[in-house]
Length: 87
Image (cartoon, rainbow, N blue to C red):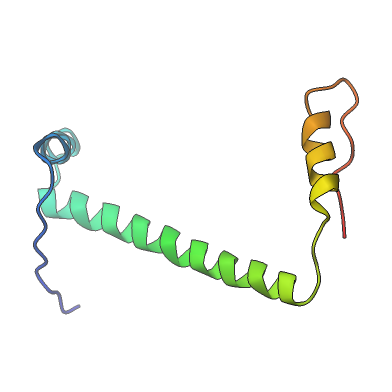
């Protein structure tokens, strides 16, 4: 796999945490950074996908009334919570 070197300035406390993890896991610093970036990019891609799906639901009218959601949320602290509101 081809690679590209990226450079980033990070706060010293974060750099120390990365170095500590690398030592504890007996891995190179670059491996720790690659793992972290891979996880973060994956999470951002999933967040974007879910946002687009949510926007499509709104466009299609698949929404739940806010008052129903608020009533449901308030009921969660009671002995008899309401069922999850459905469209």
